[in-house]
Image 1 (tube, rainbow, N blue to C red):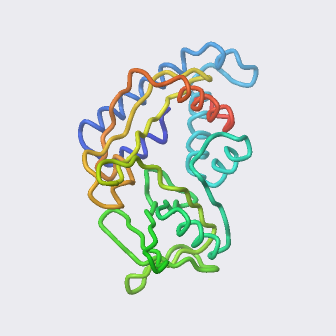
Image 2 (cartoon, helix red, strand yellow):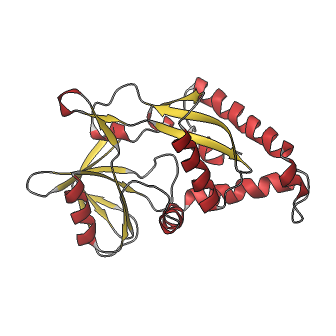
Length: 239
């Protein structure tokens, strides 16, 4: 039912809200029309079946760690990823890649993401939309704590290399961010998230909540389409 999209586009502009509604209605309609879903021995043709798939999809999108581990285990292509309880491992990962994204283990729509970067002295700083901190990975704790400009982050640490294109003057630009809408292993349509300008590190969190816009995409490469199908299969997501 496009559950993850619903979360990302709330709140947003009027155009994004209309796109949310249209995509949600389209996926609902496609779900009800897929014969294999309705013929399943375990399912009943009706709203209950659709809602069951929607809830399962939402739960999976929410648990970033479980989804990432599944993809890594199945060999699905991902940005270089580290899931660890060790603060020193987390620091080394950021320093080794210059830029990385620290993700909340359970979140959607870019909430809780922090773009991290290390200076020449090895100190790690981080940005979220509208905020910048010194970042400290700590051994234990309940939730992130902000004190005197220092953001203390307890484990588990979920880090990924920042994916970006290099433009003129070695300036980083956000890569293309595509989203496939899959119904019973078939890709119904694609959308792309764009941000007009990248002015600072936090702008690499390309989410409609933070100013990005959605656009329909007519076609993608065969490699991208195959990757989307493999991801859906690995995660067991039919809708």
